[in-house]
Image (cartoon, rainbow, N blue to C red; front, side):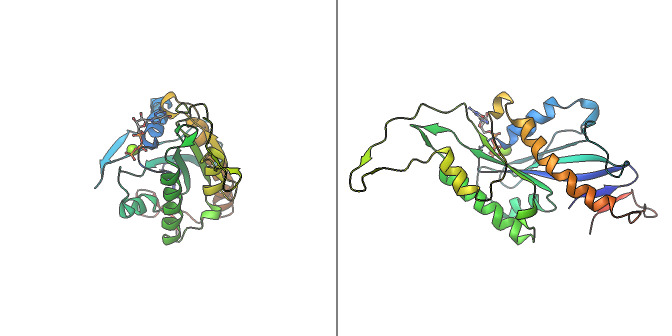
Length: 237
Ligand SMILES: Nc1nc2c(ncn2[C@@H]2O[C@H](COP(=O)(O)OP(=O)(O)OP(=O)(O)O)[C@@H](O)[C@H]2O)c(=O)[nH]1
Ligand SMILES: [Mg+2]
């Protein structure tokens, strides 16, 4: 649910960093904050949540084209909080979401993804929460960031399951992609702690956001005058 602030000449969009606990969501946000010119960005806020701090900040990249030749795009980046699943907090954070960076923890041990199931569960939770909020995830710009690719060991030899005369399936990155990405959303491998793949993940969803924003605001003419007494911004309905 993007929102327009005619006074500031900006359209705000909300990008949520979702994923299992400790996948690297906050590391993404901190890295982007650090890499953004201070003049373009707001403060990095840590709001205490019931299960941990929720990080957020906003910035208006000067590299993005204006919408309707007038409006700058201001990105509001937010993480879901917490080491424990908290559907209530997560749903609140997702309210009004315009795009999602799904941060998966793809560290490996012995050639297998240690957190395969956590990633699958988190994606299921995301889809359920979006559905609860009435958001059609099929139209949501989303990128799957396969993070912690520095924690990858050379695959070890797998035991052979003679009963089935085939190797026991590995829980590899390809298997994860098959499990959580049936519709072929864009994916990117990352090492968030080294800044690898972080800006590119954001770029992918922002690029996918621009077309729908243009369609929405450039077709709307002057439907958004500044209301008397308002600060100039209100949520879209
Ligand atoms: N080796 C490695 N460690 C990482 C990477 N990304 C994040 N980490 C580490 O993983 C831990 C968790 O990172 P956070 O960014 O706090 O993860 P989070 O998803 O925000 O975690 P919660 O908010 O607790 O759910 C930290 O110790 C990070 O330094 C990565 O790409 N490689
Ligand atoms: Mg965090």
